[in-house]
Image (cartoon, rainbow, N blue to C red; front, top):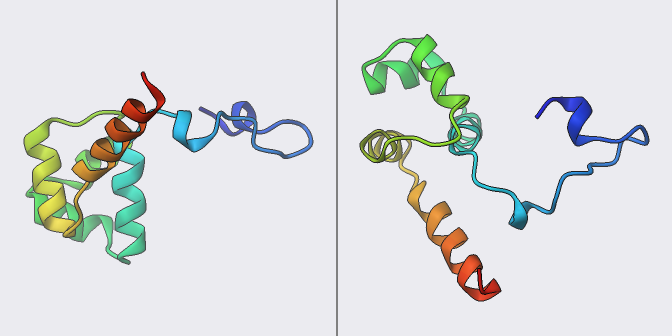
Length: 95
């Protein structure tokens, strides 16, 4: 979504509530990297890839399970928990 699509002329966020949005795992990985104050180069080195591949990861809405496991280990963060929480919310909502 571009900036124009997610905000109205009054500057208010017009996207559905967070609980109604699908998980964009690349965005979540990028946010976690920023929270940990790690560089893209460091992250690329840990994953044995180049920076371009890391930026491609940030743009992905979904990621292969093994890659997500590797990312979880490198960042010491359970990204799978995001999906478990979404599954639990869906069950509670009857979806």
